[in-house]
Amino acid sequence: MSETLRLRVQSFAPPVVAIALFAAAWEIGCLAFNVDEFVLPRPSVAFASYLKWQSAIWPNALQTLMTTVIGFGLAIVLGVALGAVIGYSALMYRALYPLLIAFNSVPKAALVPVFVIWFGIGTIPAILIAFLISFFPIAVNVATGIATVEPELRDVLRSLGASQFDIFRKVGFPRAAPYFFASLKVAITLAFVGSVIAELGASNNGIGNMMVIASSRFEVPLVFAGLMVVAVMGIALYAVFALLERRLAAWAYRSRSV
Amino acid sequence: MTSIPCVELRSVSLRYHSDGKPVHALEDVSLTVEQGEFVSIAGPSGCGKTTILRLVSGLMPPTCGQVLIDGQPIVGPQKRVGMAFQNPSLLPWRSALENVLLPLEVVQPHRSQFNARRKAYEEEAHRLLRIVGLDGFADKPPYQLSGGMQQRVALCRALIHQPEILLLDEPFAALDAFTREELWGVLQELWTVRRCTVIMVTHDLREAVFLSNQVLVMSKRPGTIVHQQIIDLPRPRTLEQTFDPRFVDCVRQIYDKIGEVRQ
Image (cartoon, rainbow over all chains, first blue to last red; front, side):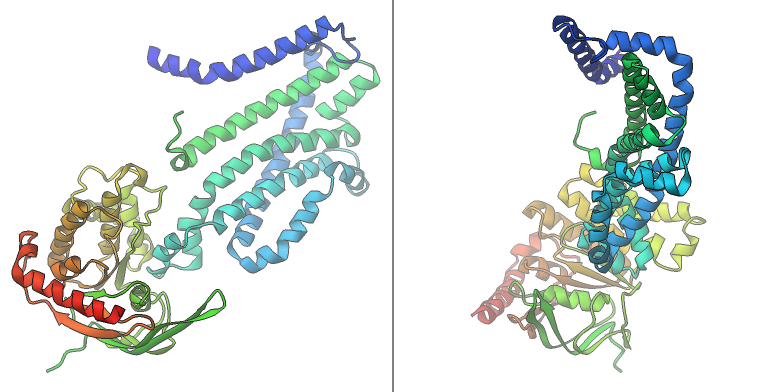
């Protein structure tokens, strides 16, 4: 029992210490250089503001969480589908890759006003931005995973008379799983960025909207409290996908000690 | 009375393009392998030995000529064929047992019965793993197995769906000498139990003589068969026998032939 406890501590201690040191440096820096609260509030002040406004922050946080998760869910479905297509077919890869790059190069923030024209102010633009921003890494990673399947593994199945679909199911998909999970960890944090960006100007609720209102009232500590809440939610979802990855693509992590 | 040979190549030639350059891999290769025979193909590097296996497995069609199995020209991959490659090529996300079961998930009629008969199939896989000396390793993932163990799993995988023909592409080339010689014995035993037809490509002439009824020697590219040697040594063969003058003589004759074609 004490052994598992020790391992727990060993895995949790480094990130906790790092975060604590970062907060301490920020706190001490602000105090030492006498930084105005209006410019950069100390973490303790932002946290106090969080406690004060908790009941207002949480509904907004849940709204942001919901838009992020929906947009991210769409990105998974369509990203895997497109990734599978361009990973499998060299022709589709050549045909679609430049278009994909073009789409990804468009600054997503610039699309917010367009979506507002199409869908009005509200949840939909935030979902779409979260989707667009997190879609690309998923599609590219799944495509890479499938395109780099060793020809020998494919031959093993081909020599048995397996169909293309069999090969995808038995080799392509499991082979792409580690790539897929790696992309999820990147994409989920991007999805938060997307939904908060959209909420800044195109929503009546959500953390982004709350931050805009707070800054217009010069409540800078509350702005930072909002940022912290987003960051914490990002870490939480990242941890969920990291855990899933460990479970479902464990074979790819064989040599690393946990 | 002549029976229909199990595998027959009739004046098979193969040309293909690799990186834009034409490659003339095989020229007028004819050979017949009888049911239950163990035939090895030896020859200089790049002479198209592996290509012959790919033709018989149906992974590749010939440019001209015919490849027949049981007298029927083949079109596309064959479920009657099991294949093991130079690399074990195990799926790294599956345990040894799951790797052995793979062909049963793909090949009919096992495929549609797979879930219903899973227990029986697993027992068969365990039995094969036991024969090759991997008792107790069934649940290990490939990376926890040594190269020799992985190759044994690959052999089991090639045999699980009871193919009539087993194609082996330098199956032991990547292994150290002791493991290799140990696996000759394992393969001989599997072959004796199963009585399937085996075509094996190898660089190792002792290996070819140890295992085969017949050794075919190929020329340089474009490859063709230049020599056929019947190995008439008593079975089951033992590693002791490899020092027997008759064994050494067989190896010597094939060695000289290959020396000639390499000139």
